[in-house]
Every structure is written in C-alpha cells, then in structure tokens.
Image (cartoon, rainbow, N blue to C red; front, side, top):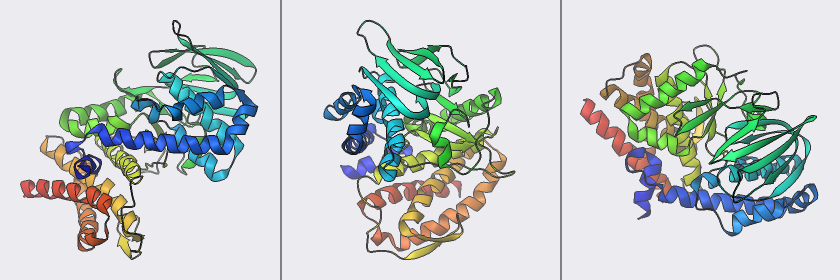
Amino acid sequence: MIDGLLEGFSCPYSFKPDLLNILAREHFVAMVELLLARFGKAFSAYGEGVFQAVARLTAQPPANFEVLWSPAIGYARSALQTKDKHHALNAVAHLLLHANVNGCASDWSIRLDAPTDLLCGGVALRHCKAISCLSSATQPTRINVLARDSRYTVQLHSGFAQSDPVDSDVCIRLPAAGTVAEPVFLLCDNTAGDFANSYDTPRCKNITQRNVDSLTDALSLLSSVVPHYHKWVMTITRRLVLVQAAPNQVASGTIEGHCGMYFVSDSDDPGLLSEMLVHESSHQYFNLLALLDNSVVASHVTEYYSPFPRRMRNLDRLLIAYHAFANVAVLYEELRVGGYHSRHALVNRDLLRDVRQIENIIKKDREYLTSVGKGIFDPLLARREALCAVAA
C-alpha cells in the first residue's frame, strides 16, 4: 500500500494526492503546535484572538490542502530555530492570513514588533505595523492594515485578495504566470519579504511582462508535452521568487518548510524554466517524504563523490541530488520525444552522464536505503532506464 503511494513522490507517473495530503496535514499541525507552545504568550501579548484562531487550526485541521500547504511553516521553523519573537510574529501573521485567504474564517488582530512584509494571497503587504481580520458569513473577509502612516483594507473574495489602494508602495499586486485557474505568483526583491534573505543569489529588482510571459510559456510547454509533469509541478507550486544568476548560469533553490515557494532564475527560455520547476518541485516532494523516515539507514556514513557540487557527499545527499537531476533528465528526454528541441537538450548528454554516475553508486549500495529511500529511487530508476531503452 505505502509503496504505491511513494511512487508518486519519486516521479509523476502514478501520482496520487492521498499521501501528500496526509503528510502536509501532519507537518502543519506539528509545526503550528510547536509554535504555539513556544510563543503562545507573545501572541497573546501582541494581539487579540490570535492564540485562539491558531489553536482552532490544529484542533480541527482543515481538509483544504491549500490551508495546509502554507509558506508560513517555513517562517515557523525559522522562529523555532532562532527562538526569535519577531520571526514568530511574522510566522503567525503569515499563517493566519494564508488560512483566511483559503476560507478559514476567524477574527483576530496583531501588532508587529517591527515593520514586516507579509503575503496575503496575490498581494504583498509591505512595512506592516498592525493587522486585524474581521470575518462575516454574509460579507467578504476584511483585512485592515496599518503600514507606515497609512491604513487600508484588503477584502478576500473566493480565495483572492483585493484591496484599495493596490500597487502603492505598501500594497502591491503580485504578477501571476500560468492561468487564471492555476496562477503562480511571481515575487522580486521588494515583495519576497524575509524569505528573500534565505538565498544568497541576488533577487530581481522587479517583475516584467517578459518574466510573466516566459514562465507562462514554460508552464504551457509542460502542460502540452508532458502533462504528468505539469500536474506534479502545479500540485505544489504557488509562488516563485526570481533571482539573477551569473551570465551563462542558472540558479534555483528550495528552503525547507516554505511550502510551494522557491527561487528560480530569471530566464526567457521555456525549456530551462521547465527544468528549474521540475528540479525544485522534486526537492519539495523529497522534503515532505522525509517526514516519514530517513532515506538512508543512520549507521551508513560513507561519503561518495558527487559530480553536481563536485564534492564528497553522504548517500542521503546523493539521493536528493539524484531525485532532482534524474527527473530533469527524464523531462528532457520526454520533451525530445514530444517534439520539443532546445539547446538545453544537448546539455542533457552531460547531465545523463552525471546522473548515471550517481545512479551506479546508489544501485551498488541500495541495501543502505530505507523503504522511503527505495521508494524514491526505484520507480525513478525504472522510468529512466525504460526511456533510455526506447531511445536506443
């Protein structure tokens, strides 16, 4: 039973959302309960109704995956690691805003100990000093914001945030790639908030229409040629922070706990953007599955040379790299078979060489993989080998 569910985390061919929903719910509840236990008194001191609203989310976890798949979990992890009150207030404000946007009605208010940048659906709220939420059964939920010396209101309509003013220096509508039904919001240096500080590659200063069009083209490419990868990516991708990679390089990254939100390079190449989307989605799936168990038995500490960072790595780190890069190798082969050709497909030859190098190491020492590790490795290996056999 469990093996069949793990396969969809390895690669997208038999993906079922059952285990994803379970893991997201358990992760959400565990992190939020820890946040309440550690900072509950601060939440009560800095606000009204905050502790109660958060406690309801853990006492009766929402069935809606969107509530559980919250980037606030990453902020909660940061607060717990640093024991920092500012990080905790940031986390709880993000948590409640995200829950309100996705249909969890609650009334609460909070003062922030320093001007804080927050996200509310498709709107970035900058320099927030205080926020209050008023829910109604007959009217849209109202988020009242004090930012710098101005006050304004954000209204929530069916999962979307609307405000007046929008696109001021304190309230910015986020550009969205993809479709109206499945938007992916794009963030830059002045809208990514504290999340921007967790990655060392410079963020783009603004989002252009070219950025929106390029990412929409990448998502369209996935949808039309490899729809299983499109579904896999879109199931867990909500926001992208665009970064400026060095010339002739790409950079992308996932920060554990920031569900559905990661960094990708500014690029106008749909193939390259598709690669980054699949690569970082792989990491998001791997991080969730790691909540079940380690991927490698704890006693196995042998290090191996990895061609990707060009340094020695433990077997679990090798498996993480294999999971992401082998999915990219499969993606490029399927794009080629589907009639899409780009200069990056040529690079796939070098990628395949490196993937095979890691693959051979893991096959040789497969006995040290746990059931989770084998559930990640085996289906992806089988898929990649089957594609190579057809290509030959």
